[in-house]
Image (tube, rainbow over all chains, first blue to last red; front, side):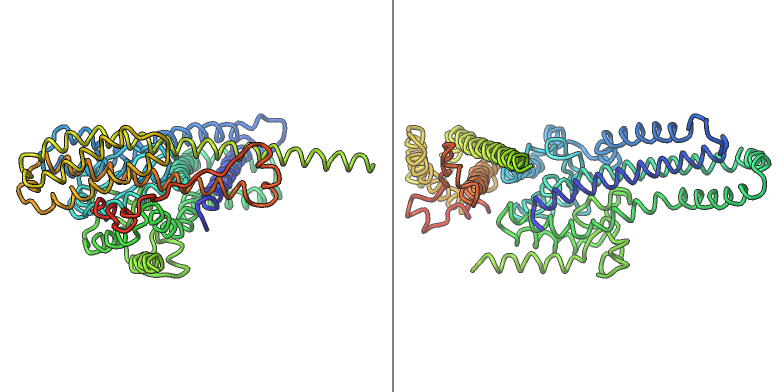
Length: 329
Length: 186
């Protein structure tokens, strides 16, 4: 898969996920309508309209505020702001970071993303945003301290590829939709617990026995769907996540023309075993390596495909070294 | 019926030509932009050099030749006319700067001086930016050329006045022999 196929695939997935989500909103609303307002026709579908409105507004807000929220959660600071108050030794590192990001933006032919530093001693990095020109790259303090220029360049190239491939946009949308699905599920569940019982009884009285049984089955399916919706969306996001990391490694190497830089960086990052404290589960899939250090990321296979966010580090390093070997002929 | 089919074929053909033409125009503009990006980075490099040379002059007195070579190469590069001439003169400047970076690595006093290190970093960054701007230009120019040369677009590309873009190549034999850019990336 090359860059353009990946961009097209990401666009397609974005639309698919958004369509599925709209379907989910309708389903949620329809259930609400039948159970709370009555199955008879002629009513305005209050629930569907409400779910659709609340869902779209909430998703839109999370989509446009998504990158800011992630950066805020990790306490990331803009590199210019840090450089103004840094010591000379530090200033040099920040200057180097700033230059390397410039270089990679030129190599990728996209506008320069904003650059942030996360105050965390574990080496890690992530990109977030809504596509080229509207994205940010953040690296941890530990990464700046541990890597030399070539290695840092490799890591930044990897993150730049995530932006150029539109991976960041897909992930921001998924995160926004997962959040909204969780919110609406929670509301629906609470609604059922408090007022649902009595109203359901009244609707069953009106319909008679047969309709009640069908309604009950529908109700059960509805409840289950609401409960598992957030997990389904999350699993969807994870399924595409591993392939994306390999691809970002490869197109990162295409930018620097130096796969060994990234390979060495990954080796150094891997040897720092401590989990990255400041990055939580919600933004784990954005990082260059799993910040939680979960054992599931060490294996290949169906189970790992479903739940792991990153391919095994050894496989990634081997793939990069192979690229370097081919380039030498 | 037959007329209708013929009409449909003509419409499809026209649509295809329009979309191919627009694609080529888009690529052509990207190529031009890529070329301007190289210029921007070269200008930055010219502006940076006097600062750098002044700051290392004191510590590198006995490497006067290296510094003079850099300043001379810069002066020549400023007077360059046309892409081919520029490519050659900028190549010489790249070489001279590569030598300066390599020599400076050998001076502990320079390496411990923060302002010099900062300037060195800036220079390395600029050298890389020039290199990556060229790399991007070559990538996009290759894409533009391929789009013109593949069948069936090649049938009309020349008729609309599209010409293959020139790739940025190393014109200087000495530069090809000694990969000074690699030194710059360290």
